[in-house]
Length: 382
Image 1 (cartoon, rainbow, N blue to C red):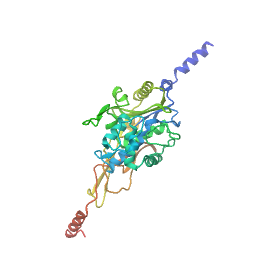
Image 2 (tube, rainbow, N blue to C red):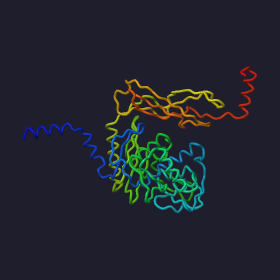
Image 3 (cartoon, rainbow, N blue to C red):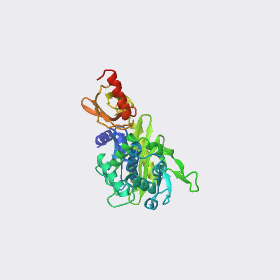
């Protein structure tokens, strides 16, 4: 009997501590996940595909659509919009918009990102799509494009509604897309406090609903959520050195426990994960020639670092690369995706990054095209 006991103690001693630690990371959450932001590698998961209400974390998809419109020039931060009655009448978290009030898109984005304002979100939905219903259709279309399998949106705010749900993993994918493709979001999500209508009698003080950005090292986003059905939720991101993590925690009983368990996830990730950069952001990987463009030779570069997850020997390995540049129309701006680069080791894909252009490229104007043609003719090109 004594030998058996000693043997059992020896067996349990060799069970990895990290497994036992993981089991107690988010015991009170309905579900959650921790991923490395550049690779999407899952570090920890709990019921990651369970379909649950996600409250105002819904607004991350709205933020993606807003930033896409900013980046393609459809709207500008300084544009003023007139608030509709529908937007002004939204309840829940709000910045107390009034019907007929004029407010800039930048201030609406602050309201969404810092105060989780429902009225600001609906106002932006109407700017982009005309109505909230049409905007929600765009949100669901984007969800399909991102390959989300456990997400359906019924509104743009996250207010409780039958059939409105997502999962921890889908939320992590949305957060990853938002951070990697629209890093401007961090200018808003990292604000702890700010003011709206500062030079008016209706001055409004914004305080971030995500307290981690003030109290957790490296935290700079991303989105909180709370409704009766969803309970307390949080999509948090933090960066230390080259390592950025995304933590999703859903269905907590109160904000204090939500914050504590989210920090436990992040602590675990920063203590166990290593990321090695094998090609840095902005590295030029290809040059292409484009006719009738302001730049005859266009440099294609990495949009983000190309990183290998948790591999101490990464920098000593020999990788092969598959570079794919998509066909694109002019004009194109730096930061827009024009292709992908995949890294392989022994035939297995180990990392991937989007490609972009090193600088904006526009079409040549008609007069310039005629001028260039005349120069070619008189110089004997034709």
